[in-house]
Length: 155
Image (cartoon, rainbow, N blue to C red):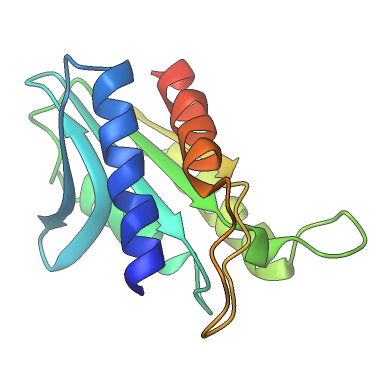
């Protein structure tokens, strides 16, 4: 991810920390070799937020988290929540979403059904990532805060 994606990730972390201060929020938390964009943790709950900016395979990291959960990686937690935020990159002009997002959501929903204590929430991050050299949307902070509010509502 680039500097703008990092800024959005950090804004999400900070906004989540304000909305759900009972969780310890951080960025780039490693689960085995997989870095998770934003995590929130207590002794009972683990929240993973994956930010899908422009990935060719957005199902990959989330699938790894479910794989790890199936292998017992999160057994110390009573609840594991996986939120996958899809940027505007995955939106189509028709109003539909790309097949990449559809497949990622299918993988996440199917995996969550097979893992006890794990829930999955695919959400839209209302930011269109600019092409290289493009300008950041002026209201990106408010949009990141909107996504954080949606995540917090599910917790």
